[in-house]
Image (cartoon, rainbow, N blue to C red; front, side, top):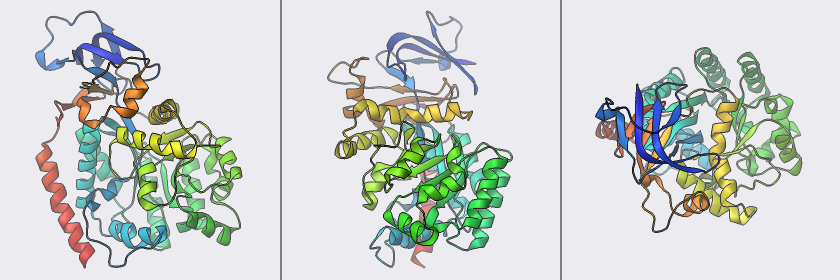
Length: 423
């Protein structure tokens, strides 16, 4: 079955060419989008979206999310006030992730999926952590995402910070998940990983022809720990295990790098993900793209699920470091599609679309689109969303599940989590 978008103004996401036409959107993983002169007269009304005056373009992707943090919004303050980045992890996030159970993870995934779709995001690359609820966690996230219509590339954050046994369990569950699902080998960060765990991860990367998804030099602590304990930098350590050799590898943050480390990355096929709002929130520095090459993407790091917002923050912060242009940021915003396509991951085909109801005081066209992208467009303009050829958001509301049910479940699980944090 196909969907028809009537009288749409289509924006080619790569060339930014504008074209007004009717669109025929086919269903399925490999569904196509075609320009058609007329809509067949016997087409059912529920297969037609009137897009006159609306803009249609490819939907968005999030290259680094943390759905496990969804229920943290407004949570109780930690018993010990953090004074640096390491203590933020220790007293906030590593305390929270150990309190998660499968029901909380499901609630987090459902809300993150809803928030993503309503922001025009149909593909999420997630980096998950729940040390006392590892088994079944990725399957739970995948199920929630798929039910609402979000495609995904998941991983579990392997780490030795809670003992070697949890590191082993992380590897074991990663292996089981990768046997049946597309995904990555998740690693927390160099400073919580022994050589033993990195060797195990390297075996999994080779066995499944995969890559790693890891936090890299988010704070100077990561570098200092590596140099003291391993007599080398973080990127040099990862390179010695062969992780930079994969075009599937994702290096998140990459703030505190030397010129040599940036060269190692730029000379490799690995990808880097910028998470500017999280970096600003944690006061760890501002991303500088200089020397890192062209394989740059954008993520939210669990702060939210709105990629338009993330792109705009990246542009404004980028004025401080390397005077990036709107075009530079748009390229990073869209690079997630190239990453997924070039590595053979499914779920981000042509038939993933967003319909924007954008009433601007000025004309938007191919010549000035980037100005509107930075200074005008936002998630409130998302009216309809199509994922793999199916309407998943219509008139700004979810199609596949009642939004109030998701909110009610999330609040129930949030209160349950907060009670545990108060213990």
